[in-house]
Length: 284
Image (tube, rainbow, N blue to C red):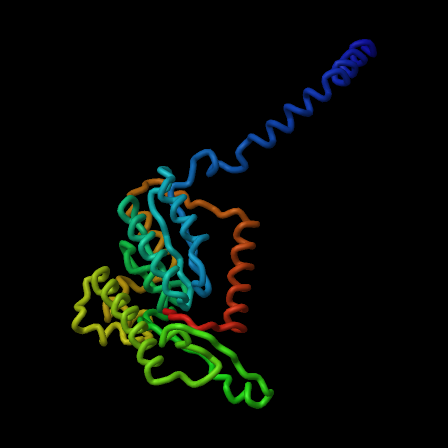
């Protein structure tokens, strides 16, 4: 008996490393849940905070575009808007994505200005009952620190070519010509904004003052104005994605916890920077 036990112990000792390797491989490769046995077929993309750069969300949209397993997308928006070019980039990326798989935009908080622009090409727009929608307009502003500079004894020295090269300067009051130039720029951008909204939402461009003109709407009034399709909560928005994607076994892709934390951290950092620094540029 002792001899048999000794042989077993000896065999374990000789094969311990091999058994340990197999155990580790089994633990690593074994799915942690039954949901991982089947790949996700739906995905949520979040657009949060001021839109100052579109690279991260554009990359996420591109990855979804190329992933044949993902059949539908929820664009979850809680953003006050931001810079013009990145807002337009996101809008047109969503437009391209919609050609291959349905997209539902959901206003979970704020869907205003540039973030509303980003949503206009979605198949369906749904807003939380307590959300804020709209603010279709363009703003360009700068401080005038001329008096402060005079007080502390600071003067600027400038060499320039071009009448409007100093338009928007914060060091003095703008000239009439400079203001007119900046107003033309904001007018051009605003007309682009309302034209794209009217085209995407099937609205009458002649009546743009009713749904644009920087009006800020509650979800109910936004629906009445034609800016959104439904008023509802996130579960209803997800159900709409599942319906449009025509999936019988919906499985939502979960974000890595570390990645999610870093994105939230970056968003909060960008909001803080926007509070401290505000340069002259057209914004939605």
